[in-house]
Amino acid sequence: MPAVARTISITEHHDAFLSDQIAQGRHASTSEVVREALRRYEDDVRREEAHLAYLKRLGDEGEVAIDKGDYIDVPHDQLGSFLDSLGREARSE
Image (tube, rainbow, N blue to C red; front, side, top):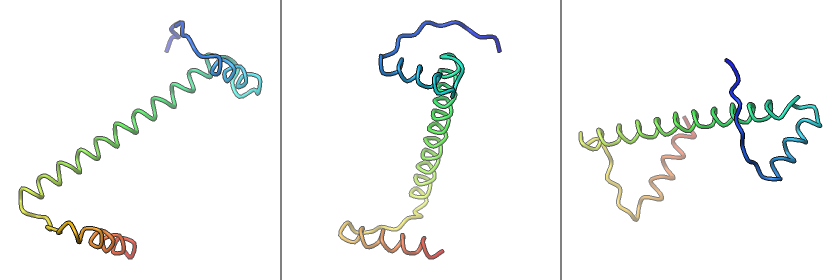
């Protein structure tokens, strides 16, 4: 993929970080450091989007279960012990 030139502004802290990465030989140029940072950021965004999609799917499944009456009604004062028992059950499996 052809490179596209961009001009960005960074803090002195990040400028020093870029220089350190190059001086330590971790990267050969500022562009390499920035490309690495963008790859990692892009991966983080993709993981976050996948996680949010997973949580939405779980929420949707929960709504369907509730609509079907497939749930347990736990009184508020018993919720803590109920969750503790679920945790113990999950760990034993």
